[in-house]
Image (spheres, helix red, strand yellow):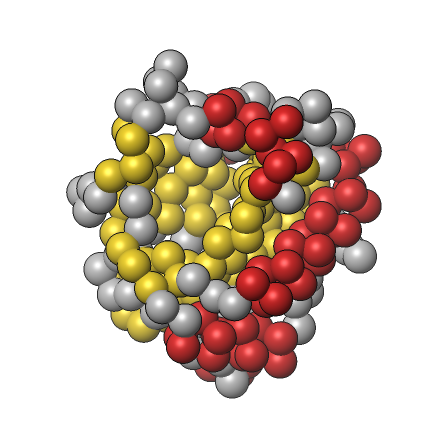
Length: 207
């Protein structure tokens, strides 16, 4: 498995093959969906000014299969990343239609009443199921880049821009600010998950 590590961000091209991405996109399209929520002061609320996209409730067997793949891949690079996190929360399946976005945020607790699981997040993971190139034979979209703001090094280089491509797995520390740029055309399909510290009972129960 080829892994490119850039400070607190790691990229794994080819985590999923293009045929696997195509099959998962069909599953996501057919699954029930609901508008995605955000956590504010311990409550999950609808706030389209911050996050505008859909969560899809895919079959359990699909979630388990992808979850095992994510755990295995993360375990192979955990030592390089300097983490002992080994409990997975997720995966979640999402779609971003034209006009969708996710404003700048962190994947950790920001309020004393936030769920304990948020305080446990150590690494965030995103898998892109499609991208911009028509040569893949997959649905395409414009916009929708993942932007991650690192905290060290040259201030002019702290903005990491990740252009979505099918099958690419992105891992980054959950406390880093990040955002999803607005989709200007098409639909962006992706999977998200979070790795937590191993001594957290709540996270162990969620696996």
